[in-house]
Image (cartoon, rainbow, N blue to C red; front, side, top):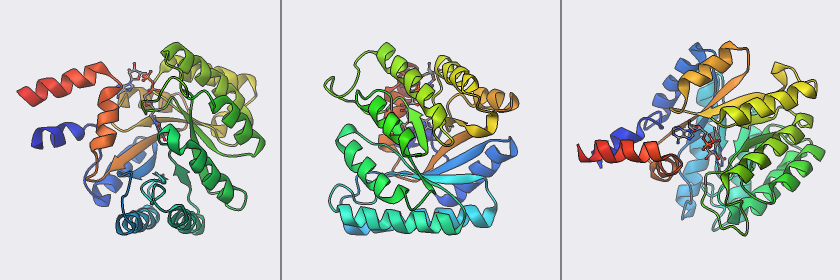
Length: 280
Ligand SMILES: Cc1cc2nc3c(=O)[nH]c(=O)nc-3n(C[C@H](O)[C@H](O)[C@H](O)COP(=O)(O)OP(=O)(O)OC[C@H]3O[C@@H](n4cnc5c(N)ncnc54)[C@H](O)[C@@H]3O)c2cc1C
């Protein structure tokens, strides 16, 4: 277990908010923005869901006190979506209201496809009155091009990613090339949305998005490039040096296993890295 914890450190900024703020300030010193994520998903009871809401409120306050250039990302199942939708909605509203008071922003991460519609419903229920909230859409899902069109027409702030969850072929493209083609089409559509975030480590996807944004007349302050903590750190800094706004997703907390597992699963080199270190 200790070996795994050590390995997870590559992708996770630390156990608590102090570690996370320290990591964010280091990124800021390199000109990178951040989005802080308190790891955890699938809260099973009210006490855990409420504790997660309090942690998100604390994150917003700590960001404000420390002067860090960061917003927050959260998962609705951590706020109780799986067993009490109203509880999740109330907590989300409290967090978004606090973010607004502190002139900050809340991004709702997208989880597995069984949550997509509920997540979008809760997001849009808030979005019209609360501009300080944004959503994530996943190019791997067959429905996403339609969701992107709706987001554009409703002027929603979207982070576009490929999607980290294992999905059946009925809802997601099984072939990587289709996921990539969907990514490029969705990114081009997002040129008409406010502050689109291109969240990928894939150079070809970034290049295609930048080309589409340029053709649509966007300038560098009109969009963000986003990457995950511990992945392609050098590339993030190169993109920043080229003048792009780059935001790093900084997860922290003790419930790191599902997040770590997704990072390991999506790249076989990581699996080898884990296996080698584990057995040494
Ligand atoms: C800022 C941000 C927020 C995200 N939020 C969500 C979310 O809300 N919901 C969701 O489902 N997914 C989210 N993701 C994860 C995303 O869906 C993908 O699972 C992940 O980004 C890997 O896909 P890729 O676009 O980087 O492309 P890939 O084709 O997987 O990778 C492209 C290249 O990036 C590098 N790379 C990619 N992954 C790794 C890795 N794990 N370790 C080392 N190198 C790697 C490799 O060089 C690889 O060749 C987010 C990703 C980012 C960057």
